[in-house]
Length: 506
Image (cartoon, rainbow, N blue to C red; front, top):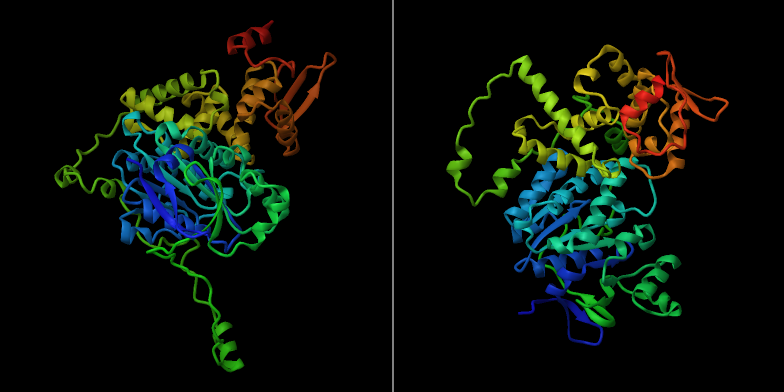
């Protein structure tokens, strides 16, 4: 049975329908300037399809939380939860087939990207038994899959872009149908936009966006200016789930509405200037805390997702944890170190997103019976930095290494691993790591970027780089007086650590 939903009226008369089953296999891209009706279109599509398919909405402005009242969506306020909690919430939402709205309102751009990536990764990496059909709507997709680097960190951008790429490129086999909406096609990563086969193009004014929209719809360039004349709520549609030829349509009404509607003009209040001065320039209230207060207590996502399960199971008291001895704590640390070392020994581990590495780490810990000892994402990043430099927990606790860690903290988080790799080689007197090894420690294939990283770290006053007569590189750590042995910058990244030790002692 084919399931079609009505999203409005075509310009020539008659209903504009969307084939829901075809959409699940082909994905959708929506484009239009602010005020063109993108969010209204997404809301109409979500309302009409809610009885038929599970949904997840990545909502940067909190516009879609009102779906909860009429359609039973679970609203997850991202600022109340850690990245790890949101990753687990994404997994559980798929397992229990609960439609959800991830409300990112109140977070800065970097934290929006990190938390959205964690939630998407949880849905993407759930077990095969739970690959149920699901619409995943991402509003303002250019924030999560930017075409160029912005003011956020490289790590946050990699996490977010990787999650969006997985959704659009590999999500179909896992039952995930991506629906992405953007104000500017030019600001959206091309590899993400290129995976959509259905298009709804709204009003836009910039030449570059009009040209790209015309190309996607198979229209001639001279027809591109038609996008300037579209009214609010009017879109040009094309794709196997919509129409085989470009088709104009107007989106129909919705049952729910965003919390903040379209601004309306209203008269200014009548007030004397002195009264206004007294109110506006009154003494500010005392500051109670520098930290923003939560709007509501953090909800228990598990209890909400398992609301249909037995209350007796949820209410069962947990046994009290027995304190671990120092020896048991040491053994746990050693086992965690071995698991992380095994993960990093895989050929592509140096180039995988930290979120993917963390998920594999959690799975292996569970297999080893260490579920209760799994560190959070922040602690995992610190462990990963040390592990890439070959440091065990015992070595990292050494006073000298604590000083190195303190000095590394002035660098951006994603560069600290590179500094630690150099510091390890310098302390042990091994040859200076080559560009390929430094690039791997940073998570990139670019040797040029590795050289720029080295220059940047030197500019921060942490190291001094020198070259001997044979063109080999020597790096000395400032103040610590640790220096690497001469190393070939062009050495391949395939020499095991034992070979480096032998080369240094020769």
